[in-house]
Image (cartoon, rainbow, N blue to C red; front, side, top):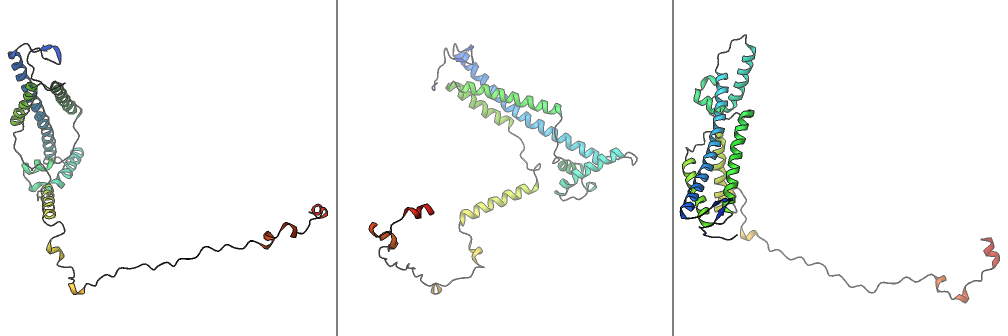
Length: 260
């Protein structure tokens, strides 16, 4: 199909969706815009649901780690010890050594780094969101394959509005490891240094011995020795017996053959 601006008698996806006038075309474009906005909303919902699961897991570990457990309850003591062992490495990244020295917000931030596997029902809900997003995206792809200008512009408008409303969130690197920012800055500095000095900075050559121009000796080209031509190869003389004429060969008697 080719790019077109057809309005009347245009069909999309099925024979029931047939454009009969300008009003129906406008309604179809508005519906497509809202469909793309719904797609962006579902993507944001998936992200927020993952954050909700991480927050619930962090709160569970913090509640277990800060709970007052009786000494005779061995099962809860083991669960508390396991929670402390999971939180303590991430808590040390913030500069705190012990759980008792941190407040609840610091504990939640440290516990948010604990990896976990969602439950079966949580994964069912996540899979449903993914399938819905996949289906809407596939429908939008089929609509774009009609190469209708009004439809494609409506898809672009919906993507812009959906991203404007549902991607507008607070940006923070608090949920990332502290070393990630340092690694990014070091990588940026290395790239900028290479662009300015591809062969190395002058400071890097200070420790190297300086060679004066007069110390440089001209390099003499090495000439390979000439190979003396040799004469034609000498042919070995054949055996004297091979040079003998037939009449010179000694006669052979039948008795000699019989003895052999």
